[in-house]
Length: 127
Image (cartoon, rainbow, N blue to C red; front, side):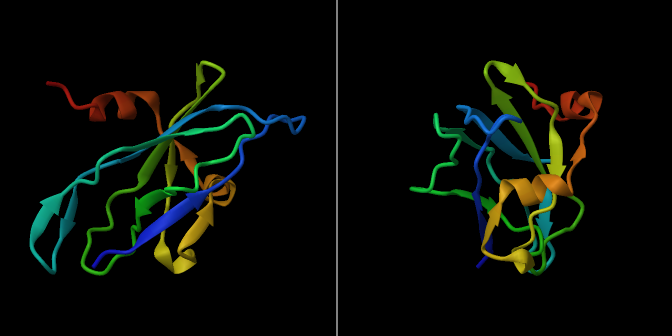
């Protein structure tokens, strides 16, 4: 069975004022499992944070851990925030279960990198 990580956090402005908004997490690439021999993708995970800037806890935001045994390591979680109607640049997160079953978004963002807009646009699924 795969490990998942609960994501927690509080979104505040620079002056410490809470902001409501949305966040979407999506995988950067396909995932393959070399142990059970399948290719898959986790669905995007979206949530709203409330007027206090808090991530939901019931149910919590859960992301598939990237360090699951047998899974490919060539992907990351992309996160995009929309706050006050403004969409911020997409960032790439490393979410490993080895860092704990519950992790704060601020810690994950501290080691993240901006994903170039052209890369994000090229990954959109077109029907």
